[in-house]
Amino acid sequence: MFVLSDSGSHTYSVTATDSVGSTSAPATASPAVPTPLTVSISQTDGVGEVFLSADVSGGTPPFSFVWSNGATTQVITVSEPGTYQVTVIDVFGCDGTAAFTVTSIPT
Image 1 (cartoon, rainbow, N blue to C red):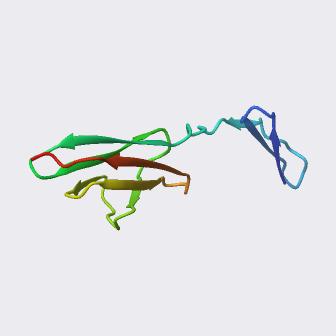
Image 2: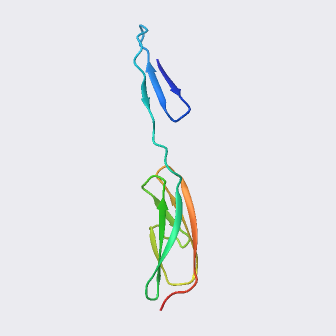
Image 3: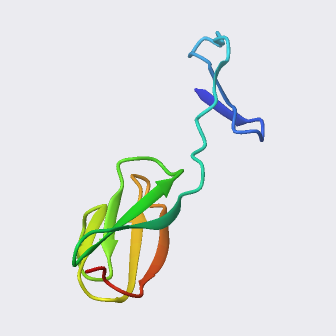
């Protein structure tokens, strides 16, 4: 028989008891709690194009990226002004979204 107990502070303890009543010393574990995933977008100007990068903080890699233009990379190249949105999803399914408006394309 195994007994799992939670101290309420993300620390768990397991004690095992065999068929004759012998009990093991408790084993404890404190799993890491991931930090919240936040997303921002930065712009780098090129000639006739703009590069938008999804900057991720927190969460747990690997990350997947889904842009409003259908791209699935961390950095996209755009040649038209407009608002671009990205959703980032981490390995546990946590997500964050950011939007960025490109007002003009440098020449």
